[in-house]
Length: 207
Image (cartoon, rainbow, N blue to C red):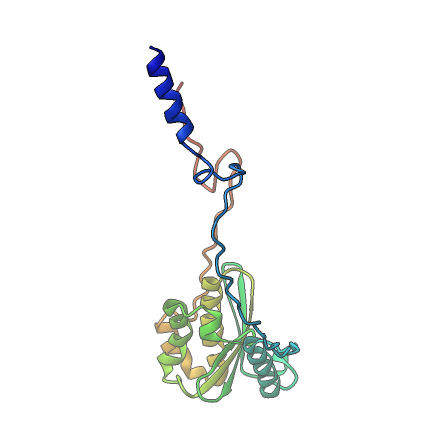
């Protein structure tokens, strides 16, 4: 037993930890990384452009059209001779015809732009002139208000037909034959008390 203890102590004393363990074991040292030197970036300042107040092209176009209409209609709509008034639902349109190339201007805007390019509404405007073969003989100037675009388009059609009667009374027969001189008197029926709309009743519940 004593011999085994002596052999153990002699083996422990032969071991030395000085070469393997650092003096301060809590500090861990890492190899230093190479520092990468980045060159200083020089940014060229962008030129500052002063924003001038420029009107959009649509506004310029509408302003030009307004000047064009006023130059073509001296004294305004009321001073013209070839004029017609059309009505449909709640829409009212005052139409002036002048000899030209077939332009149609509504409220100082091009007809295609004003009517949102709807082919049916644009067709309403072309039917009266097309019936008499005047598609490219007259310019049409319109002031319209009230109702929606559909009602205004039909009111303009009636106004053009009535203005064509001022050109010649001989136009009455072909226009009347196409039904272009008839005032469409249909309007929305008024709402009734106790109903949802003019005739629509609330849902009936038995229990």
